[in-house]
Length: 439
Image 1: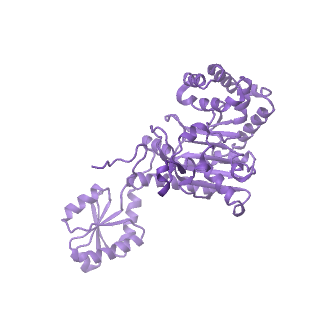
Image 2: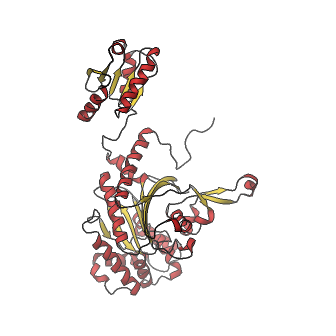
Image 3: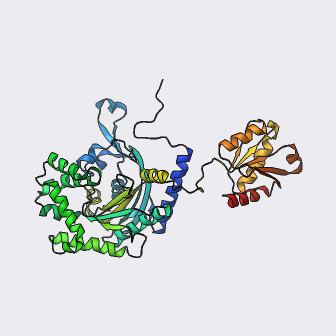
């Protein structure tokens, strides 16, 4: 017998799951559009060479490759891949459609991505990202506005205890240089440092040793924490690029004052963000009860140049929808207004010959703005009411012979144990009023 569970690290989404996802997505979209970001979508599959080499060695290993098809299938070679993130496809789109897009372009994109990663709590092989990016400007206003937009979205979803960790790749480069780590090993050092919040100092130290980095990780992290404990000590502590980076992150923090991000942004010199395409400020959002982040991003001014031949300033942030859903579910953050039932009203039917009338009255209720489910089997009323109650449907509309003769509709409110009869044309407004009053 064929297996029925989904592939490991992937999931089926039942109706309640989908409703919750749509609730979260609708808020994120609404907030992003308030900030002037426009929607964009890209294909699930990209050319393999579009993705390879953009995420560093570890990222390359997590790309889901698609074997060649038809007569080339036996070769075992791949020419396509499922998209790993939404940023590299965006860079390709900018290069391909440059003449159709404005010089200053702000976009959001909410679509699934795929990674051949090891599944864990809140980590899946197929998951949605909610990306927001600004292209065409090097101004620190871009980073500050991204922090404000994601803070606005999370606050509207009900989060209050999130922290936006902020750092700069050039600050990290200066720190690694000061520590005596050779430049060819910087990438490996950043990948290891990026795991600090997950594996701790000892785990980073073990990875430094494994990767042949000739510096004690403990001493390096202690130096980073020393700078962080006394931010004033950073002035004059770095080379010129490091000093410029310090001024840049200080300006970003200043620009968030008076925005939804003001109380959430913190400088964190240990933040690394392992992806190799970041060139400037980097950001990550964390909440106390989740190992890992709710999202992250940063500036990637050179990525589009890989496709276009000339660099385009770019900066973006990605919220992890799956992790947001996990935390919101565990904390009970979904409001009661998020629909958990298939309908507001179930239309009970006693005789098959009355189905046409039931269809007509249901249509009237739907036009009034109600979600209506017709019980299509002529069962006893008790069985029909039991079904509605088991599905959480609050109202049962009864269309019996008396109601058909009088042009009325009897409506039972199951939780309140009340019953009222209305003219068919006014029943919808009455039900909507009760829904609003009783929640």
